[in-house]
Image (cartoon, rainbow, N blue to C red; front, side, top):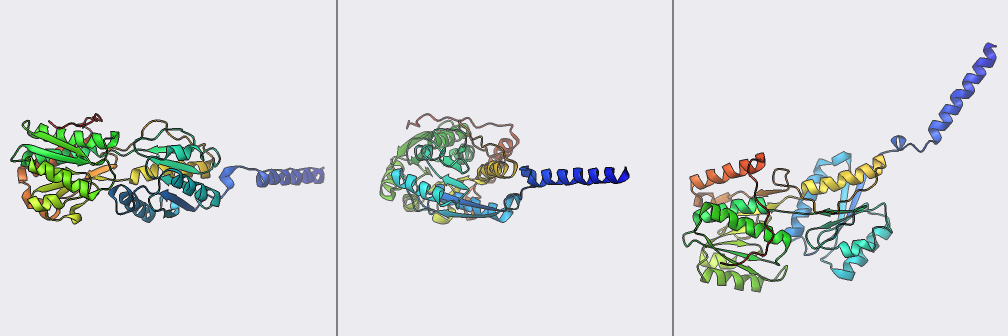
Length: 343
């Protein structure tokens, strides 16, 4: 009897082992240890929009989220069908886990996302459409540090006239220009504003022309969203940079900048990819805009560096107090995406 029982027990154990070994349970599969990202750039890494993404990736790579070895490849600036063709080549190669299209590329992604359901696609910024599923829509707002820059400008202006030179009027451009002037007028109700758009992502000549025109009409500080600080240097006035710390571009004029930090955005996307690959969770891309606030690490104000002495101590203290309130969540900078107008 014991022998019969022992044989049955051995058989049962063997059956259980066989079931466990053959089970498709994902918990027994090895977690991924590598992540390869293909990046479609819109303007090039020398541009603040694209360059700050690569800077964030370098920081994240060093941190090794989920223990991952992260690599990436980025394109030259591409748009339209060229961008779509590059995405298809990346997808068909089978080498890339995430295709990060760093601007308005939802039309191109729409044609590919369902054909390659295991790839996570990313589109960034205004002008996109949220499809959900394996497309994630990253947004970036730097209106909070722009408000702080405006407070500085309002306090420093002697003419009570400030200028802003933008690229295109768009949701995520208008918000920071409007916040800049809101901060300025909160600090100095007499502030008048001049606003111009060069209608290009990169046109140094037109940027210089419009900036010089604002200076000629009395603007004595400029919020420069187009990257040309030569007119400020020639007029010996202070400017503010945009999207990255641009002090090195013009050390004699750039007092501070509204800085985009993509770290929380990239980690959000990596976490979604990781959950899909290691836990089998379906992709659940957002259909509405999604951004991280200054409190969440999505933006910051650049240090004053060697121009700090141009800023009175009381103004520095006021800015630090406002910054602390924003980070604590006790002060909210309103989001105004209406087209900014000159007074």
